[in-house]
Image (tube, rainbow, N blue to C red):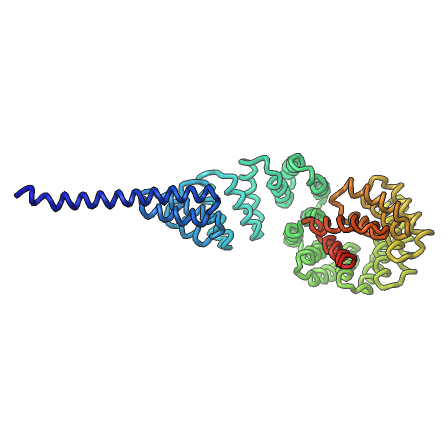
Length: 464
């Protein structure tokens, strides 16, 4: 009787064990499939198999994390987030991909939370890098600075992070920036020119007696290294320190133009604060130049020249404005006046020569001697040598143009104006193949900027 009563329990136990065995077999089979798919780079399949394995092997909480990582690798960020939210994460990699998924879904508040929590657990350079990226995207410079401080501590060999950290230190604590900028230059010599600009700005800023002008100098340096967002922040800080600083308002207008935010309001306010500031006048002239309103540009430079009659910058600006209007006689006289005021500066000789070449105005009598004088004053300067090649091209000296411009492109392959001029020289010689190769190189270069458009225009014209 006792044996008969035990039989149902015994059978039930066998059935439970059999079901459990089936679950184990299915779970581990799915896990093997998931790992194999991941090794083959089939990440979407891997994510599905990891999820299936997690259903059977319910005590393996890490499998949902693996499913999330695989889904993120597959670019399926919504599914990745769903997987990650099911369980507490247990690896640095999981936190990193959870944060990455939030970023891709533009869930930035949640991404900051995920990255911060993960970084607090693992003190991870990768997570701090993502955190810095989020803050940079949201223009939270102080947050980015804090994240970069940790990232560079953990990964001192990251050249970009070192440079960016140095930039932000220049904004907030300039005295601390020099060491980091120097390290960035050592890690990546390509940023040395920018680093030297920033180092000089820190030195000049320290000499300013007004805190507001210290920020203006730093902002100008950011503009020179083409970081106009940080420049705008510096100019806004300058205005907070002194709302009557006309130059800060004018430079803020320039920064807003560079970041496609207008800028006219700030420039008008700057003029209302100080009508005698030549820098305000010059920045307003630059604004009118971009608008193609050369009469207004000319008026600003004439006023600046009236305030500082011995400053060659304003004479060159007057030349630019007259050239824009089409008054070539007055333009030539203005450029020549700039050279007369500063005969030892190659820039004004070069501007005079380029004007002559652009407009075919007394190229042999004035343009060629001007650029040769510029080369004598700055024999190794690539901008001046490029101008020499351009004048040779404009005057029909095609072989000399090719020789000069080829030497410039070889010594400075990232200086794209010389590439454009060299292609034009080859076209003038009838060497279509050489011109085509150069133009496609410029067009396809990520850092070519507006010169890529110039290259495409020439390709469309000569190679339809």
